[in-house]
Length: 159
Image 1: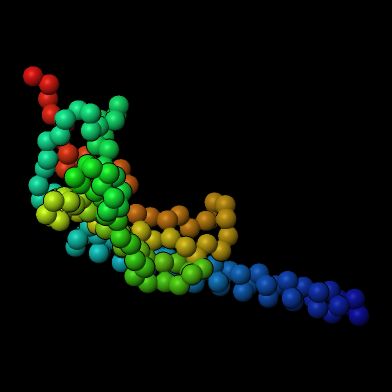
Image 2 (image 1 turned 60 degrees about the vertical axis):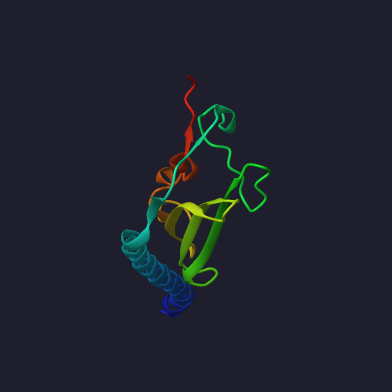
């Protein structure tokens, strides 16, 4: 009989760790779900690409995939346009699930005019476990819909 209580004493710390881990995982999951829903709500309000003006450029300003070679940052390298990128955390702390907002803009150097903007929201962080139950970051709109420069710059046709 003295063996049974000793066995239970050995199991209690292990059980407590498992229970605490499950509760922590459930808390992260519910917060992550809440942030995913908030990202979708915000994305429906102002997410996506808005083009205010398009520009026709010569073919040498595009790569072999047909993508405009617009520089990032204010150093336009003589291009006359650049892509400005800004991001900020809307909620969450380091090590916890987070919601971030990113804004990309194509700007003309000569007058500082914004030709287009792309707003996206991303959730992620707070991963407790890895593997099949790992929390996957989400982005709205999807990354494939975010190539901003391709919406602004049009390749001049050879005539």
